[in-house]
Image (cartoon, rainbow, N blue to C red):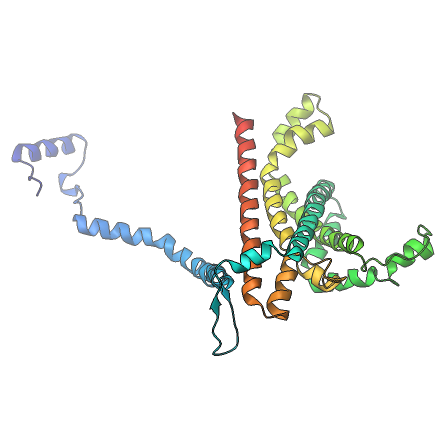
Amino acid sequence: MSALPSAPERRGETRIDRAAGVNPAARSVRPPKSLRSGRRRRVSLTPYLFLAPGVVLFVVFIVYPAVQAFQMSLFDWKIVAGAVSDFTGLDNYVRAFADPHFWLSLSNSGIYMLATVLPQIVLGLGVALLLKKKSPTQPLFRILFYLPVVTSWVVVSLLFKYLFADNGLVNFTLHDFLHLMNSDVSWLSTRGTALVVVCLLGIWKGIGWSMMIYLAALQSVPEELEEAATMDGAGRWQRFRAVTLPAIRPATVFLAVMLVIGGLNVFASVELVTGGGPVGQTDVVLSYMYTQAFTYLDFGYGSAIAVILAVLVFVLAVLQLRISRGRDGEEFS
């Protein structure tokens, strides 16, 4: 127990209070330590109460399914009631790495990612720069460019499937109308041309989203810096390279990470446009996983493919963030 202040000490405090014009009787009395700690605990719980619903949803719909998928990947999982699922360990992972079709589907996912990420960033930035300044037609063009983003993947995928059919509008325009080709192209019957169609669909649908991210980022570019660069004689390209690009760098990093994740997770467009054909040549990782799990009911192998893809996406995202942070550190060092 702490010693009580002596009488001279209390008189000294009273004289100091009177000299400062403070009524000694108004001196606040500190509450007991137990009450103070209880009050701090109540205040500190408030943020966690706000976070709790989101954390619960994250655990239920993200963490638990991920853990369950990993568990299923270690078994020859049976969905029939009463059937015993035999433990196989890492056999499903060994099978995946030795499966040529898995590597084919992974390469198709990689091709899609590499072919769609950069065009979406470049074209989205270009459209955002064109629509940055206010004009009577600006709202209309923003809506037109963003419309594919909010349109269902089912709708746009079926649209592209009919456009690039053997008797579709693309062949009619290129062969019959413009006479740029000697014969019709069977776009969806070979791996190369089918992947071109799927990549064009992904780019067309994603430009509007990149545009909106860049439009928001361009609003934060300091006008004072642009005006100072103009007064120093910098041209439009020099202002863009020295002022605009550094200012929107966080938006570019965000877009790159999200588009890489989305590119590796492509599924709906491939499934609806090509169906993985011809003969599985346009399968991507998720379509191959879907076929194994829900067509052949090989849930253990399908879960192993899903876990491998999740680890790959996580590693690539972390590498992108570290590389971007390293470059930012070099710029400011």
